[in-house]
Image (cartoon, rainbow, N blue to C red; front, side, top):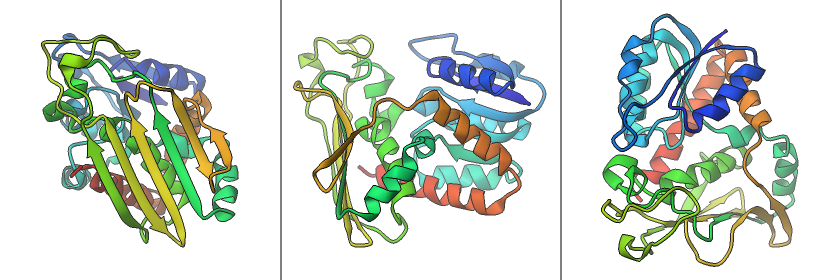
Length: 287
């Protein structure tokens, strides 16, 4: 099978995944790190079973449109595109192509156990706190025009992906929606993720919290790029069963891609994916 990877940052992980799956691999990367462009995309020829877009947020839609006619399945890294309407139009404009937001955490081996714990619990909290991990402050990551948001577009989609697979997300109600910018670029002197550009833009949320009620359960999702205290990534059931999450293993990415390929002609699978992808966009587009 043939695969295409656009963007070789996290795209390196997908290269390893596709190698393990024994796919043929073609890659396209940026030729301008400060203002990413992907002119080599116009040189891509042939058809692909699976493509993955791993580029800056503001480039996702244009690249998806450029490669759609050549691909059976196009994975787009979180947070997808600008909003739900843009995602729906992309799907409508290319009915022969299957679009899917990357939701790798749904394919962890621990998901089955999490489902059991959810059934036994009344409150579930998913927390992703970082002591000092604002991604490249002053870059496109922290420019709302280019990233569409901050931590709400970076980490929160992972949590919403968990919620979609563990809860009845379509019948749940959102009770709290908070997105705040707690830091200013002039006061940020370091980061554990990249470098600081003091001449850049920083106008995005760096703390976000969403709460839901679904089937008698309360869900609290919160993410913080920089709390100056500690790094914490866990799911908590009824305040006592604390399960560290850690970064998603490569096996989950393999399972996600394999599931999409094996369900290529299954309309129920793609209907479910579209419902989830539109809902996730709707949760973050107006924060």
